Amino acid sequence: MNKIIYQNDDRIYAATTMRDITCPEANNMALHVCNDPEAILQNRKQLEKETISLDHWALPWQKHTNKSYRITQADWSRGAYSKESSIMGVDAVYTTEPQTLIGVFTADCVGLLLIDETTPCICAIHSGWKGTVQAITDKTVHQLLDEHLLHPESTRAYFSPSLQFETLEVGLEVVDQLKENHIDMDGCIQYMPNHKAYIDNQGMNIKMLEKYGITHIYPSTYDTKPDPHCFSYRRDGKTTGEHFTFAYIKNKND
Image (tube, rainbow, N blue to C red; front, top):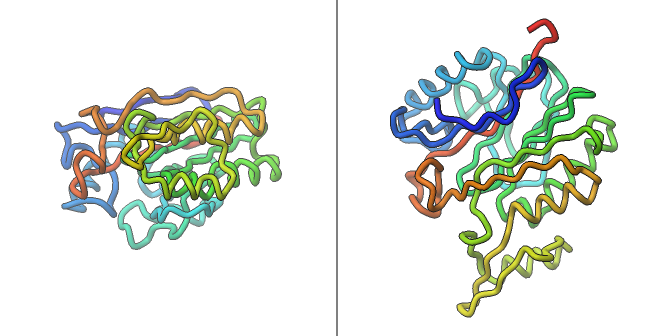
């Protein structure tokens, strides 16, 4: 299975699945954006062979919110086999429990994994421009630092493929929303003559991490729109699938 592996050691497995035309629905992992749910389950069962049982997955159905949710063993299998059982109305999930696979689905949006092995704690965040306007990364990091689940000096941040600065074009009304919510856009906006602008969504989320002293940050260089190994709504419309950016904490004896 085509994927980017960020970490695979004795404590953490973290990765993003990529578009792969040799797989059903090009390796789409999202049940809420698919033509054939059975094809998605086939892809998930292949990933299960490479990670942990689907029975230990717990997944959200994202709605561009700034809400987060702490996942426990009581949530095992939610969203794993059907979209209807997903954790609803949240765009960030986190857990401290081993053998619990969590993640978020993205095409052009930012997917972000936060990993602190000292707790241990893992967190997955979905932030399109709507999530960035609502500062979901800032809000989630602030909460997890307050709860002493993340620590700036030991937290690593991995970014999934997303629309890069050169391809994320938005209307000026989006820029206005970012300004109204005091999002730090320094160096992250380029105005265009057609009353549009390019924005650096990944860059703005990096600034939110740096605000809290997180320095172990690993941006993605994949640009989803031009790259055939990526899913892109902007390129393919509603027929596109989605990447899955996920992680789980391993048992100490694994």
